[in-house]
Image (tube, rainbow, N blue to C red; front, side, top):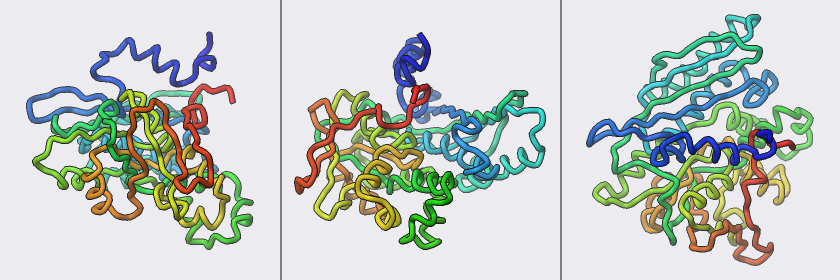
Length: 341
């Protein structure tokens, strides 16, 4: 048996039996330190020509993205960052300037969140690989998990989806810039920036806890780095529930989409990018509907309630005006490591 035979999710299931079941399964691991504080630890690995390339990403952008991915995982756990370590594998002919620019990009992102680089490791390798471990802290009552979604919870997204995928396509296929004649230069640059410089949504956490400071309501969630559909499916699978995501009257009133995508892509392409594009690094949160409405209002800027948690085991995309039949969403359509395709 090869890893390509069972795929990323199948391999994860096999490896999870080597870990404490009460710790793994979220965007990060929560370790108890004391009564008032938990330590959150998360690791991401980025590989040249898989997660970044010289065609799509400058060294500074690669550094920014590698840090943002980890800070986004901390945000998805409800944690504020404390520091990161960097494991860097490099070919011997790598330019020193490239490495310095990589760290400059990391620093530009980290400074926005007052987070230091506190250590790491350097090794020789045939391919550039960046492995970052991030450390954060969270009050035990404010931990966000995937497995705590409840039936009738509202599903909130903190911003638009699909922009990063669109930006990547523009970078990989410069000819598309001519095809997208309805896009002005500002639209194109906004989409490219969404891919190269994603913003981890740590800003959402103070708002989330402020809307009901004395309540002990449970928030379930994760980030959408692997796609919006993937995030909802992973939450539902961990919580043993289902969901209905809603397309509404004005096409995108429920699931927020970049205006630039509407100018450029067909409705089918927009839906594909939105659900399965990935690397938007927004948060997908499940919480009681009244609190969800308050949260969306306070976040603004394209935050939206896109559906609700149900007892039915499937995740269904529903068009309320019946223009399109129900769609059952699956993990197989999103990006998965080790797939043969």
